[in-house]
Length: 93
Image 1: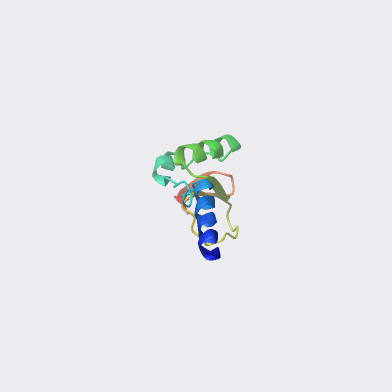
Image 2: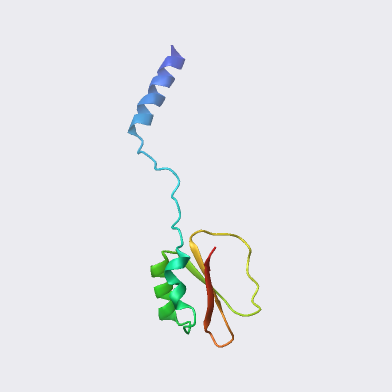
């Protein structure tokens, strides 16, 4: 009888818990939407516009010779710039 009571309490308590949503899907980067920025000077304003237009959660700016991680993140836009700060390529990941 004691086990039945414990099960009943557990069932009642579970009914009071909030529904927990599944895992949140990260934003997906759309690199094709920002290819027209190639050749422009990288500035904080341009970086903000790149993030907004691509839908990326973050923007990573990579300078010549800079070491970067090889992890793939579908919510990140990677921007390669040259020595003068001009955008040479854009890609998601």
